[in-house]
Structures are given as structure tokens and as C-alpha cells.
Image (cartoon, rainbow over all chains, first blue to last red; front, side, top):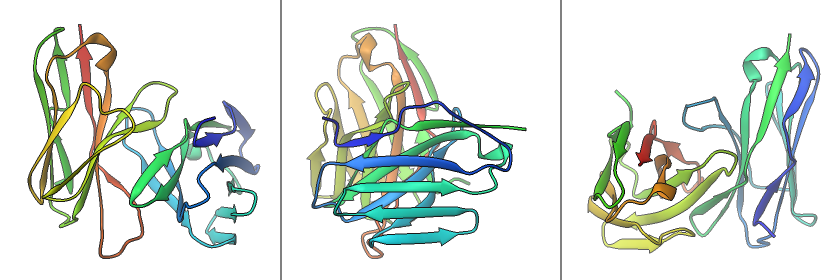
Length: 109
Length: 114
């Protein structure tokens, strides 16, 4: 079992729709949870981070964390073509981040 | 200028050659990391360093070595490159003082081993 697993892609949604990205992790000692966006050929950039159970909203993005279920998700509302990218879930423990394999999202105009 | 700079950005080499990838940062962060990315496999941790005297192996350290020459510099070496080390390599930093765990990435070094 991989330490961090993301829902398999690719994921395609129409412009304006909600995109839902999911991630599960195995290390119950994990402290911090991150979503990075990576455009093709570019370096990852942070979209959201969350530490506590519940929801965290930032503009069109909402991160959800459920430590009991070892589950973290990212919702993108009003998806735009510019949101088309690979989204990487990362889980941090003891100063190290472990990444999932990523989910590629395509937003179609 | 980028806060985390990697050199070279692209390198093609032959099997058996020694290769060094360099990373320097102006962010003043203590923690530095080297990750490898293969298509469809996300990022995997090779080595990490929490300060100049601290070096730790990640999940895929075999065939690699590192040197932390200063707080700002962290180099990755492939002593004898092999084709399955062809990948995109990222250096990253994080801020111990803020302790958010957020990683700041360099632009990547694409290595091809023939």
C-alpha cells in the first residue's frame, strides 16, 4: 500500500463545474496536509494547506481533512481552463513530505 | 531571480558518468530536500537535510549521494549514472522557524542518462 494515494485520473470537468480531488494516507502521525498544483514541465506550487479536521476555504478552493478516516480532499469550484494541471497531495510528518502520484485535471471550455 | 536555483536545468549524459546537480537558495531556510519525479509517479524523496550537519536518506537514496556545503547549498551526486536515473529532479526548501511544512521548489533539473 502506498503511503499517499490519490484518486486515479485523468479527471475531466466542464468549465464552471466543481472538481473533486481525493487523497488518503496511511501514517496516522501525519501533521500537515498540502495540495500542490503542477503545470506540465513546471515545478509544484502550493495551493492549500490544512492542519485541523474540517474545511478550509480560500477563494474557489476548499480543502477538507478527516484525520479519523485518514482522508483529505480538494474541491475546486467554478473550474476554469487555467485550473488544468496535475494536483499533488502531500502529507508531512517529522519534517518530510510524502507525495501521492497526482491527479491530472482537465477543464474543458 | 528565483529563490531556489538549480543547475544545470537540463543535462544529457552517458551511463557510468558522474553527475552533480546543484541547488542554492536565498530564502534563508534551514531545511533542504532533493526529490525525483518520474512520469505518473509523483515526487519521491531522495535525501533531505535539516541543517548543515544533518543529512538523511529518503525513500530512494540508493545510487545517490549529497553534500550540504552551506546553509544555502545542497548538491546531489550520481556517482555512476544509469539509464533508470533518467528523471526530473527537484530541489526544495522549507522554513523550520515557521514550521508550516510548505515546500518551495526550484525549477527542476531534467537529467537524461543514455
